Length: 147
Image (cartoon, rainbow, N blue to C red; front, top):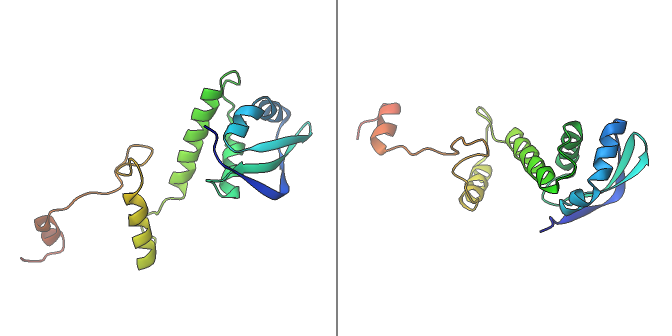
């Protein structure tokens, strides 16, 4: 099944090496399945006409750049899709809420509602837990409260 694509009003020019452009062009159909549409504008450049709608444009460009930097076996669309999923998972972790970041109550609630509706939301893509459970006794002990 193809991913929904977001067509850009103005194509975005992207510069690569010759090898990367050749690889991207050889993967045109599998990339189209992922929501990408691109055309060669020279031996070292392409223009991006659409990207996966589930990614904002900067993340979509980052994912495409990472795919081009570490090209998988071009003969297998399944390998390309797997590598794309890994790249998107890594990009998602880079955008994660990190320790020390102050969130508003609205951001906290939105984060929790999203987590509740995420399949396999108990763990990140790297297998780390996204939440832990504390018993009241543990909270009391940690915050020096008596019950």
